[in-house]
Length: 125
Image 1 (cartoon, rainbow, N blue to C red):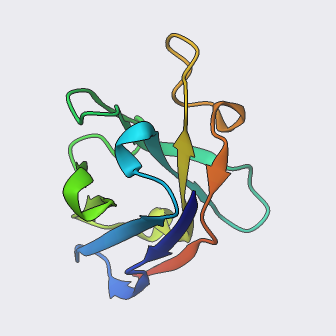
Image 2: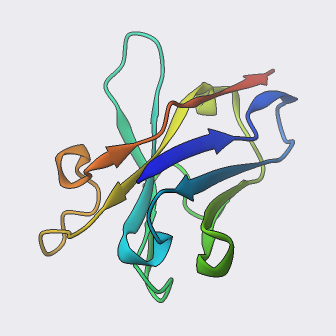
């Protein structure tokens, strides 16, 4: 499956963005999906994940209550709604797809088989 992330940009602190991750080549419903981010000089960080049907969602501690992940399998697209953005949210955001998760390891990059190219999110103070 090929993943294409979009929707990044420059926003002021307190603003919102919605990222999209469009899948092609395979049916998105075959994959659990995640969002990760990486800031310069830092390791890739788990942001959020959603199960195959969308029935289960997970969030990193730093984004809980501000970000919402969702998916529309009919449109082969996963979304990340980001509200109350902070300068610390500045990073390249990547979407990723996993055929299977080891139980409880949805936050681990190694669990994901496919990655999109990333979209830059910059939050100004």
